[in-house]
Every structure is written in C-alpha cells, then in structure tokens.
Length: 429
Ligand SMILES: *Cc1c(COP(=O)(O)O)cnc(C)c1O
Image (cartoon, helix red, strand yellow):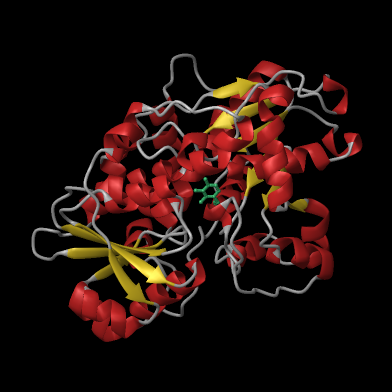
C-alpha cells in the first residue's frame, strides 16, 4: 500500500498491521556534497532534508515553521578526552540529544509529530486521541509536545513498576488534555494494549485514535536528521565519516540512523548497544528472530523484548548474513552499565545516564581493530539526572537538575492504575 507522508503519520500502522517505510530513499546527501552551508541552522537543515519525504501539501508549505518550533533546543557534539581506553589516541565524541524539554532524545520525534499532526488533522470537528505505550521517555516527550494543544487528548500507558521516579513525574504532571495510566504489567503489555485498541474498530470509531509510538513515521524520520547533520559536520571537520554507537531498545533511533545512511550521508558504521534484552543480539548470533518477554534493567527505556522496528531494519537488510556482517550488536548487563556510570567521570570526564552507558560499554568492548577507520560518536539519549536514583550513588554526588525538570517536579501529579487488559482501559478512559 503506497500512501502520502501525512496519511502515514495519521494512520501510524498500515491496515495489514505492518509498518510504513519510505518507498525509496532520495540521495539527499548529494545536495550537501560541499558540506552544510555556513550559517545554516539545524531547523533549516531539517526542513530541507524532510522536504524530500513529505510530498506536496500543507506540511510541505509549513515545514520551515514546523522545524523551527519542533527543534528549538541545542544538540551539541562534544569531543571527549582520552577515555583511558584503547591507548586514548582515538577521536571519540558524544552527541547529546537530551537538551529538549523532557531531557531525552524522544523530544525530537514527539515535537515534530505534534507540529505535523496539528496541521493535518481537522481537530476543529473531532477530538483526536493520541495513544502511547511508553517504557519511560516517550510518554513524557509526547505529553510535553501535546500538552494544551487544542483538539488533542493524549493517553499514556506506562508499566507501573518500570519507570524511574523522575520519569514518572514527567508522565503524570500534565493534567488538562493528558491522561496517564499506570498499567499493572510490563512495557510489552502496554504495547499490546495499544495495538489491540488500534486493531479494534469500535475503539477507533469511538476515540478517533492515532499513535505516537516510534512506529509512527512522523517520529522516526525527524530522528534521521541529527545523524545526517552531524555526519556531515564531522566529515567536514575531520575529513572522515564517523561511526555511531547507538543505545537501542525498540530500534527507532537505530532505524533512523540506517535511513540517514541510505540517503547517502557520510555514516561509516552503525553499532548497536542493547541492555540485557538481547533479542537483536541473539538474532545476529543465531539467525533466528525470537522476541521474548522484556526484562527490567537499569536502562529502562530500552527494556523491549520484541522491538517493533525490527521489521523496518529487516526490510533494509533482509539477509541474516549481511545483517551479521554489517551490524555489530553488543548486549550490556546491568553490572556493566553500573560500572560504566561509576567510572564515567574518571575515564571520560562525563556522567552517563544508564542508556548512554550501554553505548559507552559497547565502545569499550570493541577491539582496536573494530574501532579503526575514523572518528566515533557515542549517542547520548538522556540526561543523567532523569535517573538520579541510579546514577547519584554510583558517582557519589548529587547531580544538578536543569530548570526544565525542576519546574515539572514541582507540579501536582495525576495517574490512574489499571490492569493490563483492554476492558480495564476502556472502563478507565
Ligand atoms: C527510547 C530510548 C532509548 C531507545 O531508543 P529506541 O528508539 O527505542 O531504540 C534509549 N535511550 C533512551 C534514554 C530512551 O528514551
């Protein structure tokens, strides 16, 4: 089924239950063969790239404004010190994607999606319900992006036992058009509930449902932009294309990076880091795709047993042998995550969040041969202070709380506990 970008954003999922992917990948990078022009801002760059995908219509006409509004925070790349590993002569940087309003990279996709949806939906005549299963950070980002937006209500489903105290505040502090459900179950249960609500015609008719999960194309494509942007910048300044190490859960961020590579941007290699949820790592080892129940880890936003974007990655690289050759995957235990956080300040001069720590571990485990070939960028997906209860004891000091978070922490919170079944959700809606 071939449909426009706007339709794909609204539908979220195809009628056959499959995920939308671009029909083809335009060679966007050709337009930037000479690098990013002096003075071009990130939102301007984003608008040019995304214009290749959105087709004609209301979105294309306001893409500049959409990107200005959505990406109104910095995304710095910081060169790291010696690192104390591999002889210390390597060129390693960290890409900080956590300077948005909810301090995790999910703000990029969620804010773009909210801007797009409020332009393509006729919210004057109907109240649209954005339904999201969240393992921690998605829900906060979506809530923040849609809070107070006319014509929308948001329903967040999160695992009652699976989020950090500060993530919980970011899920439940909004009131107004945001409802938060603490599900007695895992993230997979939340995702299953959302999927079954979506495939139920009576739910659709009654609530006018739309999805904001990372299966939504409107969240994924804007994530390709930062890989495109920084690969060009690094290539410009170092003369070599960078490799990225990406903390991975539902594979959204990783697929976005593979898409940027498909568009021709100078990305040398992509390395995936997972926590103890090893479905992807096991696939690479055995050739068998075996989703399983998720297990809880310190990097909770990556606690995904059945990553839904695997379908998209396999669409890009269908053959297992090629997948195995092209995509190094490292599974990192909680013990290793804790160790990486603990020695972050001395080894790298950085305090890592538990998710970023998986990427740091993966990099530290790579052999010097695997690290050859050019600069490396470790992708940092969240601010460590979102996980202060884990990070502070390990680094032995209090972390400063950015003002964006301290303001939220002072608000009253609202949540509704439910059992993990559709009937319970319906009753609570
Ligand atoms: C969501 C999230 C991830 C995992 O990203 P995916 O796109 O699901 O692979 C990693 N780190 C943090 C902090 C997150 O919020």
